[in-house]
Length: 439
Ligand code: SAH
Ligand code: SF4
Ligand code: F3S
View: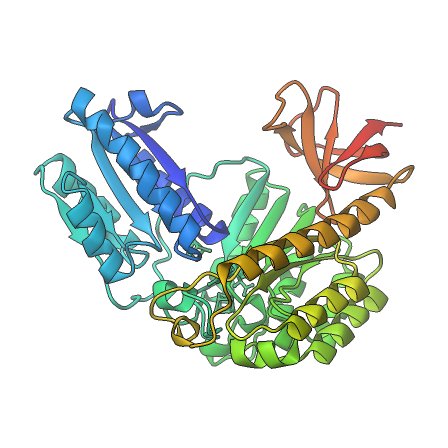
């Protein structure tokens, strides 16, 4: 299938990003070339997210737009994969709404992606493949990574936590860990090809290895990787607050190449809401953990995810969330209004919070977290940080952007390549970005 161009649009989290890189790898092995232009594409794929209703609505809109392109180019193949069609009901709705969709596939169908391509391109079939259950982890799928200096590396797939609001376990299946050797070998290969940074991915990285029946934990994996020569930075996403061990905190502090940034999703500051969310920690437990991290890891930033308006959330519950934000003083936070997800327990709770109240609470929370983000950034003024260059800034390609180990975004000028490590002194900040200069 030479001379064919593909264009992938990825929504959602790093899991989808990693899946898109696998799909790109398969396409590239089959002779496809990537294109930035939807008008030059022979194949357009949407890799979708189902975590909130808003995410799904955006995707319906986008798909409607893309379908118009088929009027100009009837040979254009349009496909949709990822978490949205993994919900069978949604997949059926997509099929009804967009009868000219060529390819619909779920999160568990990547191993057959190549066969699906043949069916669409050679046999001109409409393909609809959604597996109910995840198969075994397939190790030999190729990857075509977007970056040459930093890489996502899956360590677990799926999730067993079943937070009552969350669709992810329903669309990503039960938790499965990759074998340590497969992960370590992948990272060694990356380092040998010039990669400087890896981000280890899992819905709950702390439970890595529990399903392998061998005595090898996330901390063991992290320790092995930290000792690899030439690997400048290790990140991980996401640890669950219920099982961060003292040993892990110690390990992060000891190894200079494990980044001093922890994304620690709070979700709510109210112990009652946390219980109904099935989060398995309390307000006090979270506060103790955050303190342990601040005390145990030098200059560690803590970022978080917070949901407002979970069913039954009272004004007093929300005040608990505000109190935790005021105590921990998060360096950054993603904030969301609770969104009902069909098939999750919380969608059936009778005490849903009115939209208006959710909006008001979200607004109040955003204002507060932005104050702490600004304070956290202002504290960097005059300090010097090692920044890994990512390349031209997405917003203004005439300047460069990069990240500190603490995961702060820095803008700067100069002649550097992606992956370069530069020491920059911070001279200006906003809530979202630092500005640095060479010293
Ligand atoms: N596994 C990760 C993240 C999963 S989804 C973790 O446990 O942290 C990313 C974020 O989306 C969650 O942390 C949560 O804050 C938010 N989220 C998930 N389901 C949601 C829902 N139904 N409504 C609003 N936000 C939601
Ligand atoms: Fe969703 Fe909870 Fe699993 Fe995270 S840990 S993916 S929030 S069920
Ligand atoms: Fe969205 Fe799927 Fe990730 S639902 S958040 S893309 S695992």
